[in-house]
Image (cartoon, rainbow, N blue to C red; front, side, top):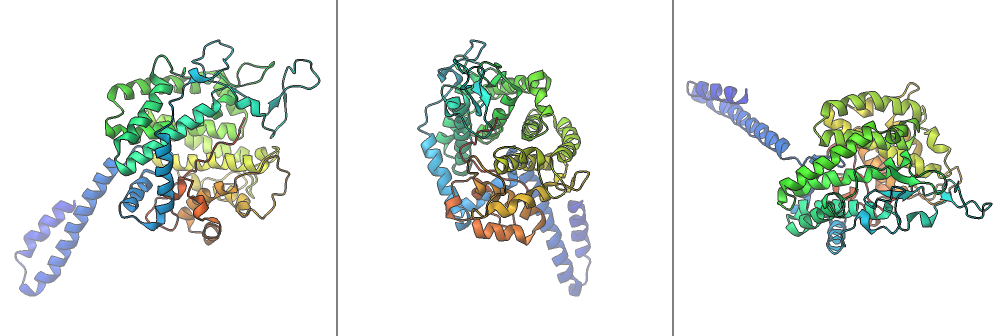
Length: 445
């Protein structure tokens, strides 16, 4: 259309009086500029990285800011490169490194313990374990796959971002090595399931709660998308990993242990849905991702978020602020994913009016570390995790109360979080999508 209009204007210009030539030339120039913008936009869309944890357009803009040494992202970018340089020295980890083994006897099976389960002091052997919600058993992290899996995912993601910004192939090569060792090499590969995740000694060999530990896998699929152009990730790697992911996706969607997570109706269900939607998109099942979001997001809000933003299923937990925030992070992640399939999660509200804004507004005042949470806390919650959620909400509705909190509580101390690189909330060019931070993981059963 633009080309046709431009050609017609050019033909007409040749027959105009001199007094009219100037005005028509200006119009023709504007049309030609529009043509160029349209072509550039189409090219930009085609070149956007296929990532889902952060908005792809934000990555593109951040790369432009890095290239011109913009002070807006100087601190978080420096921190990213520092972390990536450290990750270059990391030893590749695998499921074979753990000292404990799942009930299957197969080290290739992912294995972890429920973090809040302790020996029963009334039993000579302590079995079966009993639950002390919010009280992390430090031994639950020793000899299992939990921490190794998390840090492999974080390192791969960090290295991939570093490669994206610098084009330094060493970062991509290291990320590819970490992913190959954990998922692809026959000697070290993890089996594509979480059948033995979140086990409870003396009670059960694995629970559906293991699905929630797999949420970190979303970082890996994005990392692969970012390093693929480098050549460090080969076509064979891509084919093999896709096969692995398809098998895990089949487990996630068809095995009772995973499906049982939907009965939890809390953060477990939210994070399972976040995985389902993202991996559906990665595997080319966009229609299913759209249908799932259309059906499930409203159901999640109806079950979880009340009119004033209370998340009742999280408020009953021993660490109710931690779990309210943790679930809201999953809901915001689903909102990001909704942008890929045309589902505006921001406009969806529960039957009594609860939605993303209400849930955030309920928690937002507690961005202030000096404001006591009204319920007891077993552990101190990292309240700075509210900042990227405030940034996303501000990008959506420009509510000044969100910006006031960001202005007050953002600072140099936040540079360890990647969201400061991908979501500098003062930049008007950034997309209306959700960033995420990457501190060490809290224990979530």
